[in-house]
Image 1 (cartoon, rainbow, N blue to C red):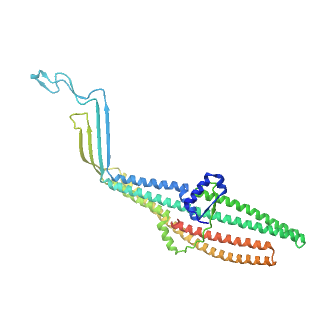
Image 2 (image 1 turned 120 degrees about the horizontal axis):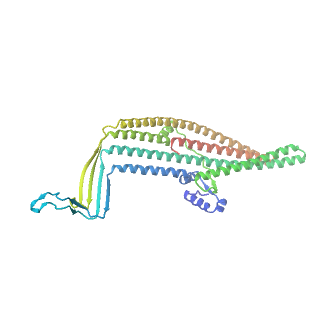
Image 3 (image 1 turned 60 degrees about the vertical axis):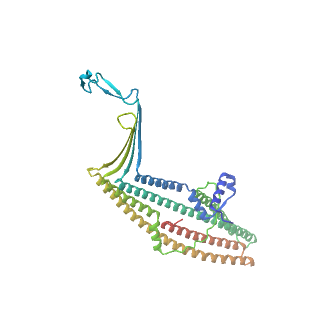
Amino acid sequence: MARLTVPAVLIGLAAAAGNPAHAQEASRTLTLEQAQSIARESNAPLKAVRQKVEQMSRTSKVVFSNFLPRLQTQTNYMWNNNSQGILLPKGSLGVFPELGGAFPPSDRTVPQGGQSLLFAFTTLNQPITHFFKIREGVRASRADEAGAVASLRKAEQEVAFGVLRAYAGVLIAERSRDVARERVAATEQRVIYQKSAVQSGTAIEVAEREARVRWLQARQTVLERQGEVEDLTYSLVDALGLPPNTRVALAVPAPLETPLEPLDNYVAAALANNPEVLEARALVDKATHGVDAARAEYIPEIGVMGAHIFQNSVPFFPKSTLGLGIQGKWTLFDFGARGNAVQSRRAQLAQAQQNLEMVEGRVRGEVEATYRKVQRSSDVVALAREGLALRTEASRLRTVQSTVGFAVAAQGREAAADRMDAELDLMKAELGYRIAFAELQKATGTLR
């Protein structure tokens, strides 16, 4: 059967979800790679983590914009029911005999403008010494973004590893069910043989009953294995983010043939790529820039400002005015606030560094443990292959004996069930090796 591409699988599964009756009848074949690809695109928790990464990226860009100048404007408009003017009280300009005395001779109001006032104030500010604080803020926000990316990578690996375990679980459960069905068929033939032997007088009735008990036990095992298949399939479909009624047929992956490298290579890869290590380093980076930002509070705040003022209501004041200036502020004494802030940030940095050492030590231990697990799994695969070869030869001999009459048919069927059991053991061993190797890749941060 030709392998389906991931888009084709998604389209088929979406169509099945839209038609429940069809979803119960048809199924789609999925490879392990396709299942993991679907999970990366459809898994709900992964989507939430990706949104967090997007949020951190936007926040970093917002903080970076503080490097750039800010253009701001403020406009005020007011209307009143009186015309604006200047009140000149009687005699406020002096006494002039030639004009008849005090001037003005009575209180006078000199009109100035109309009944409305428009005032606009536009400023352009460019921080200068703020650059040091802004720089540390930008670096801290980028450290947050790096930590979010590491969290996303960790979540992606968890999903990929979870899909692998669920995928392997379904395959093993299906093969166990098939073996149980073969056991039922073998015990049925044993029951028929014992019944014939009892009727012919060559066997006692107890042997027939014991054969029937084994047949009932085999049928019970089939029901249990079928329940396991249904439960594990539901878990897999849920991990893939597909509708619960989706039916999938899983292709058995080829045996993993990736050679095992020296342990030191995996330890070095883990310290360079493990998401938890990267996240801990991002915290150290953020704490380092936090210390620098606290120390930057001692630097005076100096900036360049340009301004434009517009008004249309006061005749003796220019309508349009341009200005250029420098703003400065320096905190001379703050009762130790800045010093305590620096010490607090240094304590946070020490905590982050200690956490990084702990994480690196734990990750190194995980790599060593999973490395040994992979080695043991490889030995189990070799033993399972040898066991399958012996079971296959035994099944062949039983078949030959049954054909020539040296053994009953039930014995040949039981030998076939034993061979299927050996095949199941080999599948468990190979999938166990794949899972152990994936766990090693997960510890090193290289799982895809």
